[in-house]
Amino acid sequence: MKPFVLNVALAAIAMSCASSTASRAAWEPVRPVEFIVPAGTGGGADQMARTIQGIVTKHNLMKQPLVVINKAGGAGGEGFLDVKTSSGNPHKIIITLSNLFTTPLATGIPFNWKDLTPVAMLALDEFVLWVNAEKPYATVKDYVDAAKKAPAGTFKMGGTGSKQEDQIITVGLEKAIEAKFTYIPYKGGGEVAVQLVGNHVDSTVNNPIEAVAQWRGGKLRPLCVFDAQPMAYDEPIADGKAWKDIPTCKSQGLAMEYLMLRGIFMSPRATKDQIEYYVELFKKVRATPEWQDFMKSGAFNTTFLTGADYAKWIETEEKRHQDLMKEAGFLASGN
Image (cartoon, rainbow, N blue to C red; front, side):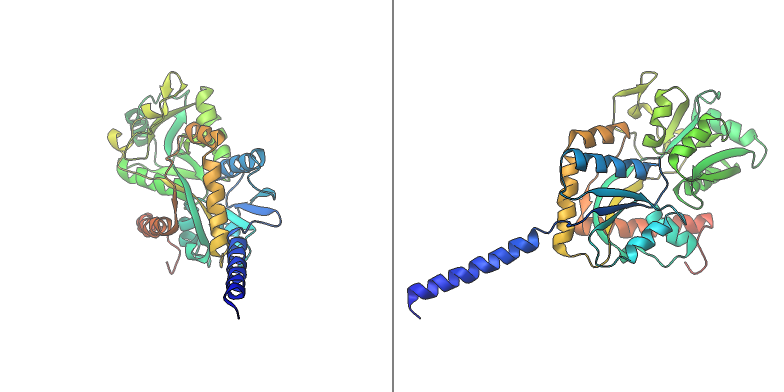
């Protein structure tokens, strides 16, 4: 073959390979994407998923629709198993909270986070101790004194699900102040806030976004945040107070810290280019003003992780949850 002809042939092969590589890198959904929420409507995970759905639609970040589907059965197990059994289906993603760990540990369902494909940590969610604004509890001390004086089991704590994040924190509170609560589980954080407004429970440990509307409306009062440091947001929310003005529970004598994952996973056997598509999608979502406003309104910790860093964080949290739940007596037989 003459040199010129050889060069043309090699160039054609190179162009073909480049085209093939570009095609693989340019994977995108070809049908609607199911966005599974392993929790009820109105809660923090549901609100985040629907905010993302709205941002994606408004800014045309996907050619295909993103369809939010709530599957709260079995403390979210229904949602996790649905995605687990959809191996090789890149048109199904799930937003996870800490029930990624607590549900299999508490129920023994055949599921582990390694059954899914990690995509990205979107944020970490705070937990706040809330009381009804009509109650005389102005400080954590007021609350603790009332809980201690109440007959055992008459002080009610409302939360989301049984043996999940809210109840883990409740058990930690019981041990910290040597008092006994009656824990009442509800289907979602929105319902929990409504129950507290109606004085059907004495307190909750809802996420900021699940109770911010009731705080603005003067119905609820935040007493402390279960984090090592105060939240960073300084915009006034109610009564001239901002999220940063809520003291840490630890500084008030409650030695309990807890942050919750808000992350994205895919079905098993996702390919590199499929994972990259969703990573880039969520980077675009995070860059929008709507997302920034959402982070501020919910007082989120905005940590973003992908790849090996995300997987390492998940492994550490799985071990921590196993220890917390063992201490609380929440582990299912065999865990």
